[in-house]
Length: 185
Image 1 (cartoon, rainbow, N blue to C red):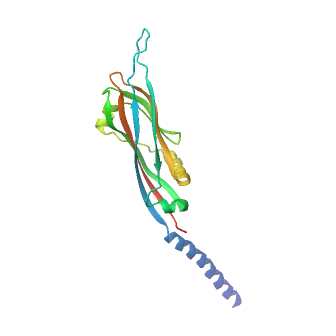
Image 2 (image 1 turned 135 degrees about the vertical axis):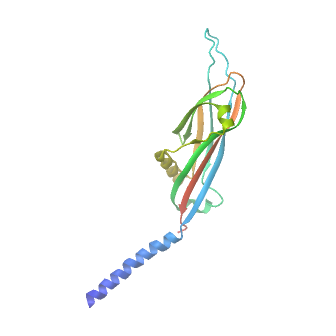
């Protein structure tokens, strides 16, 4: 009988600990953060080199913007985040103005991590509204880990451009959907 009482007591203690874990999980707060930031890009008109072949020298350019999960809804939970998952990361060329035949050979980086590269005619991609998708799960996990620890990452678009007829101005619209689980305890 004494052993039976001890077993019952042990079971009560085990279930109590399990109930505490479940109670804590009930307090979890789920957030979806939709980040939509624009990287401004300006490229001066390329000029012919003073050589026999009169080739146009590409212009280097870069632009960057911070992508943050610190919003009005998440701010009070930033130090209590349990998990972060990047559900989607896309970008596209918008607000183009300039040389209609201008092209870029460039890449998108997040925290100096190469994600995607493009060799495109900017006006064409802007007019079509082409959406470029970053889908490598390992890269998205690295971004999520950076967001969890630092609450923001830096997106940078950089490369070279040829725009012989005129300068180019455009923006790279970076869109990221992030799922966050935080707990106030």
